[in-house]
Length: 194
Image: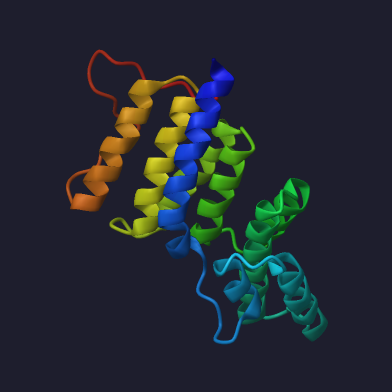
């Protein structure tokens, strides 16, 4: 039963990712073949991104703009690797990208989706929490993180927490007051974190 719920959740995540992934990617420099290949879901996107990454490393990614480009390319290659089911490679790319840019909400959102796809809902929730803390309050990325965290809560078997996450998403998106996850409604305990 739990496996079936997880498969249904991942199917729903796929729909949400298609809607939100475009806004989750860092902006690419004009002419960035890696970003274009990932967005086009090209068969050779992983190779294109690896070539682009090799070029960035050859040029020396010492300054802030170079590190931003390196992190963006790692994020894009991780997404390309997800597409070809190279989950170990994607995990390594996300880890390196986040080490370079721990403040990049777009990388955290994609990493959260990756973790949820890998059946690690607790870790995905942490990534989505970082997006909520880093992204602008009324952004599509923050809204996507809330919706995807609802999926993670459902995988964990906590429908009440999933409903709260959706309510926060709706409040963020409509400009209303979002629920504070530290203050739960009376009589309802805080949802347990995995």
